Amino acid sequence: MIICPKCSNDKSEQFETRQRPNTLYVYRRRICKNCGYKFTTREYRVEDLSKLVIEENDLVADQVTEIVEDLIDG
Figure 1 (cartoon, rainbow, N blue to C red):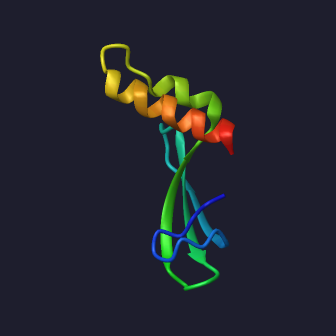
Figure 2 (figure 1 turned 45 degrees about the vertical axis):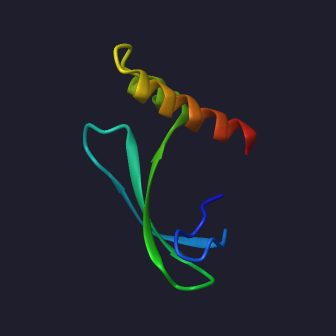
């Protein structure tokens, strides 16, 4: 579920997708069905999140842990 950053509605439509070379994520352009606001998401596959963790950088590890917990909790 993607939430609009302007009106907090959870109904949006994807209208563009970009896969960047040598990256672990996909950019998606979305438009909110409620207010019409256009916004971008950067989406990772769960399998690729572990590649983002740098052992010396606890902040990155904590952020990845939070993302995974959010995905599990729904």
